[in-house]
Amino acid sequence: MQLWDMGVHSYAVSNAPATFQQDMDLVLSSLTWHLHDVDKVFERLHDANMFMKPSKCFMCKERLPFLGHIVSNDSVSPDPNKTKALDKVEANYGVTELEFLSKAHVNVDTMS
Image (cartoon, rainbow, N blue to C red):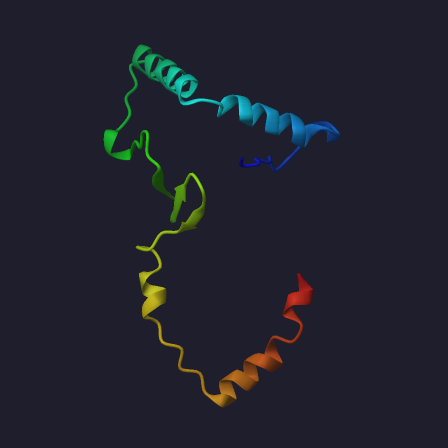
């Protein structure tokens, strides 16, 4: 089970996280209801004479690219196509560079 959380809760409601989780469980409860809702969206788009570009639509996928990440049922991971340049970078640090980094980044973990 995946827990969902919204970034801002309205009016300091004490049970807002539980209410939001209950709503997400209801919305994401079954594929049948989801397809029913998607069908309604398609009907409204058609009625408004609006169209979607098929090359930008992903339907019934287990994994899909989104904002430089690969989103799946179980995880969110970086898109390998976006991290190729980082994989090619060589770390050529000498002793003096590492000494400088250790002095420049003193207690960085406690600053945040």
